[in-house]
Image: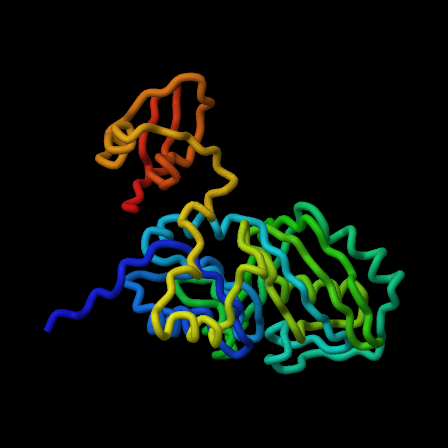
Length: 297
């Protein structure tokens, strides 16, 4: 018997991920709820973490890379006095300290964590070393050696210090930044160790917390009758790419892989629109528009 293909649904669905779920688990649950034929996510969240997990349905999967390249915002709590092998509360304690930082010490250190910096990822990460995930090596006790990588931190602010053992921070960062590693390195820099005990993502590129649905609410909305009103347009992930309006015939040419010509346009990637519908991502060079990714909407 041929496997049922599922519904053709195109757009972005923003989930407020609960703790204890992997990103893959959320994708599987939402796929069952919506019966979507194709679905993927834009940026993994650790099981410990909560917050927005953008899901791409149908043609939106073609824009996932653009969403993942966008800036992200996290709010997190560090527990001082313990370093853990996973750099979060789920790992084993590997070092302790009785020292506790004050607000002045933290404020003095934070500027060194802003801007373009180098960061060693956590050993419990999905990065591959000779074809194996670092976390698989770590679980076998093989202590993977990970090289420092460049990352971008646009904002790193101390928000609250509820007690001597904890501090709450917010960070705006670029692709590839590990918040667990920031907590680890800040604790080491302060001479007191530290690890993440709470982590919430509040922004991924153009996607915000207020656009997110809990799994429970989503289940209600898609139950009876199913509702696609929860979907954001495919082009939401492309909002920082210049738009190019084209005519119907021009749109048809681009969809069939043919080039068109325009005047008075700068070179570079453009988001091609026709009557409010996304047609393609196209490369413009000397007025020649070449489709590089076509959308079937």
